[in-house]
Image 1 (cartoon, helix red, strand yellow):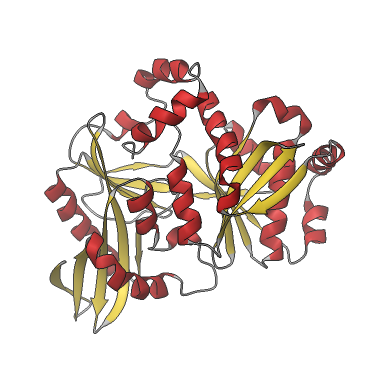
Image 2 (cartoon, helix red, strand yellow):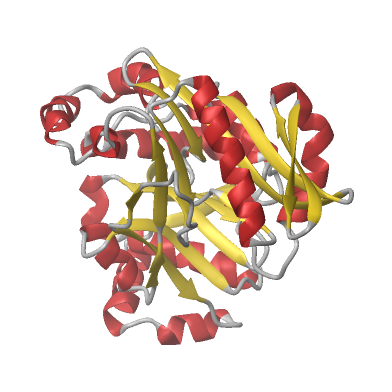
Length: 359
């Protein structure tokens, strides 16, 4: 652990940097701080550092700002590195949102100062902070704002949720029900079914798939707040999702449907049950995740009533350009087309080692 002392608002604030071996001692304190409040997404929980460390083999760091023995802010960071792509410092990979959590702008600044020092020490290409609102800092000179978080305010009862859906959406859900698709929920015992759908869908998209071990670690780290939903046609899993329940907020970081079952509306049935689950837990918000404004997934989420909210990813760039790693970069288009032609088994074998190096 390293620390630095700085003055914030005429009081002494200590900013400490914790590494892997420090986490067991500091996570209980940081978790209590992070989950204060009525509406907190599970993706804000600092225990994701354990998930990323075990599930993706990332080096992990956490910066904490302390004033008079009291936590005033923190910043979780993962050190992403590979021979293929280079080195990056990210808050946090896999998740849609991250960055600084702090009581004041001044403390935000100090935590970012610490992250920049760490980025320099690790000689990364860039530091990426997945904020929802921009934080002004002279070193954060680049940003991406082309995507939006799609979120739906939830009613108090399932019947109200059904009534507020459009006729088109309700008819598609009914169609799936008439096709005798069935829905089951579970934890690790459903992981094989989830992963069979997810890995095939990622192959079809031309994207390297995360390893099954990542999702296993999510379910183990958050046994009461993470669960899997699977839609089956007979005994065949055809759609599936990982659902995360925070405090007042439910989010779906990963969901997929086999393309050959699109006509059966399996995906619509899946999302209806995800939303229903969130209402039954008496949550206020359902977070569908990030989408490119105007894109296909944006329109899919919009039909459920979701509204866009800001997503501002900010960067301290030391080398190259933030566009170098974006999937829309033309240099990757040929690789995407080739990936889509590979057998799913091959993509499950080589994909996890590739995607873990992508920030």
